[in-house]
Amino acid sequence: KVGDESLTLPETLNRLSDSDVARRKAAADGLAAALEARVSTQALVLNTLAFEKQVEDRWRRYAEPAQARHLSNEVDADAVNALEAAVVEAYPRLSHRYYALKAKIMGVDALDYWDRNAPLDAAAPRTYDWAEAKDVVLDSFQTLAPKFADSARTFFNQPWIDARPRPGKQSGAYAHPVTAERHPYVFMNYMGERRDVLTLAHELGHAVHQTLCAPLGTLLADTPLTLAETASIFGEGLVFDRLLAEATPDDRKKLLAGKIEDGLNTVVRQIAFHRFERRFHEARQEGELSPEQIGGLWLEVMGESLGPAVRLNAGYEHYWAYVSHFCHAPFYVYAYAFGDLLVRGLMEKRRENPETFAPLYEELLAAGGTKTYVEALKPFGLNPREKAFWAAGCAQLERLVDEFEALIT
Image (cartoon, rainbow, N blue to C red; front, side, top):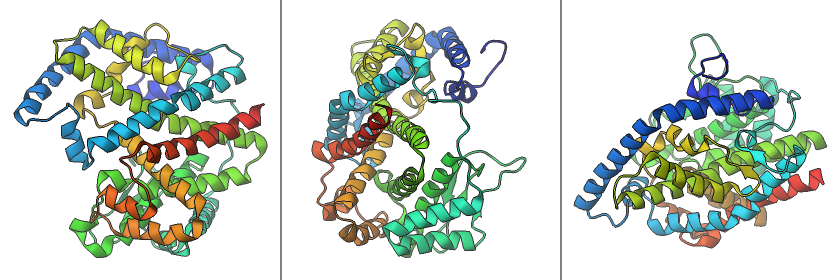
């Protein structure tokens, strides 16, 4: 219940990005009240599932609670631990610093938690028609290599993109590979906003990836989770760089803020979620945790990740209860940060030497599922089991914060 309205969870979370602070606060308070009413049940569910997991982990002789997820993700603990260490080390330079800058812009000493994703202003962003979006995406892909642009262009020339919104069409966006003998299809709802241009680039990145590895056949073309977002996030990054280069100073500020907040939500927030899970499952070994104890762990890890410029108001201690991954997919959340920073690390390599990067990158994509992520990254001189690899990805995000700070000071 948000004021006089009854909203779904997605609608309520979306309201937390509203331009009106009163509407954001009402959504935050409504969500906190709804979660508080259910927190005892949610705590029982989480405790029970965690105990069941303990039993199965013992039977399978897993060394730690996350090991089962590492196996299904085809990743090893050394890489995940290095990822976590690099991100936690970067907290002060990323989230702590950015939220302090945002608080300064908003004229407050600290942000309330419902202000974390608030827009910097209420002005309507620029829109793009379909032809403009097509040109932006293809021109951006061309800067990487003509082959990537040519592959993406085929999807525009053929009826392989379902982008027009219409009554009864489902929401969301994805690239569907079908089988290796057929071309992929791209599904999205193009509304003309800047984020839709980025979504188009993201899904076409997937489609190009699926096209390049199709000669391997359906079984070997299937890419492991660790590399599945490589082309999509990279394609999105190419288009973002193009939009940023063409933007006015005021638009640059909004573009950077949006990109930084997306990065913080994907990297810092998901690693904080992972740390919450680790602490909860470790504590659960000693016995059942009360809702208050779980809420205490949540406030601890979120306070560490968000920093002193974000105020964790009363009610926030229940927010762990809306994260369905904790129940339905334990220890999955680090995968989001893994994919994002892996691509940022590759983008750093491209920045160092664009000429040698493109053919190596094409080989990586064309290999599909025939190589592990360690083997796939080796030609670039990258080792994901080392903290330095993930730190390079964090440095790429930090540079965006540098640019943002330069625009507001």
